Length: 490
Image (tube, rainbow, N blue to C red; front, top):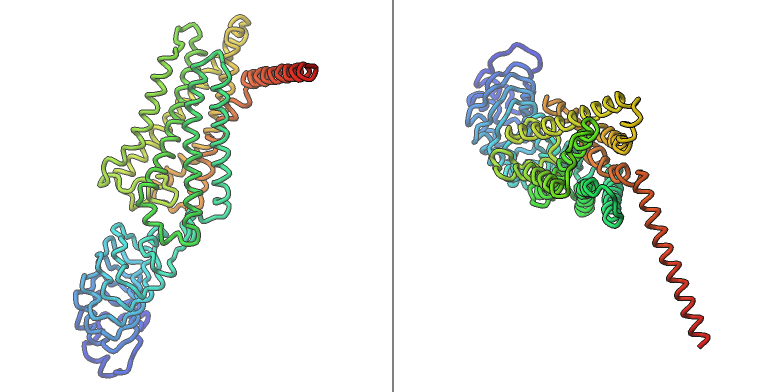
């Protein structure tokens, strides 16, 4: 009965005229399903009511259809399903309610469908989704959702679609083999590079101790990002082949929250540290005759303040679950970067204030500071005396400029991704996963190289240290030889 203008179905004629009818496809005219109309369909095994204008199904409309096997209510205007809609439908094996403007589904809506094998819920937002909603569907083998994240609430279902969000898949926490390999590469480079700088800066004495303290503090923050990546790689191996069975437990766990908070702490402390060091150099170069030269105690207080502020930013989402929800557990990598319609308003506002507020302000401050520094250098470049006074600061400023430039390459994609996600535009999860695994940590991996390993002062100090050690070894070797000769002679 496709594409017609029928507005009402007679109450008794269909069953009396066609008592053995078992399939009816009524397309394009129904507006409401009443119990009196449903009684005519008592013997139908298949009922297809897709692409109608049904906005309401009255309670009890399907109670007499105890032989119904397949029910298709997709592409209608149904905003709510009556709680007792599926009473007496124990024979139902396939249910399709896709593409309806539903916003809430009761937890026990499907409890009576014990023989249901396929449930199709495409393009339906389920903000109140819970494992309890599908736990009674013991024979369910196929389920279709709007989002991959919903699959974690039906871990016993053999086939769930979509089977990936670009970050995770039904089998693995990191869906792509390149991501699974690259997370270990980035973790090793980030951790070992920063630990090397911390050790070298501790053993090699420099003239500017305050600058060395700031760099070591930055390296400590960057090490946390490496530890975060190590944790992702370890849990990816742990859940290998059966991630969906553990996905919801993992995203709700304290381990996921802790790992995500470490990544947030690392990124925020790193941004604040870069801002502080940039402003310090800005004051030294733009105002060379000012007496602003932070001492050891002042530097320690500033670093402690930065770490305290970063820690406070990180733990705020733990204060109120009603406001922030599961802030760090919205995806498999436990990092709150992407927004969607199911995100709580408090969590959305907070992430905006961090990524598009504080971080963007810090980035603009850094860009403005370096622009002012080089403008000042350009104006004083013709004066030899002043240039000789500023030569050391200029060298450091150029190096910091290159560091900030690389940071900009990392943070600009994050700013854009966060801004686009606020418009509720569909963003492929593959983009998010590469941003979190590759772009976000890359400045943490590059900082030790840019800050320390390529600086001429560090290379000179390292050469002097190696020469000193070599000289000591040679002296020790000579002493050992003299002692051996003396012993043999005796």
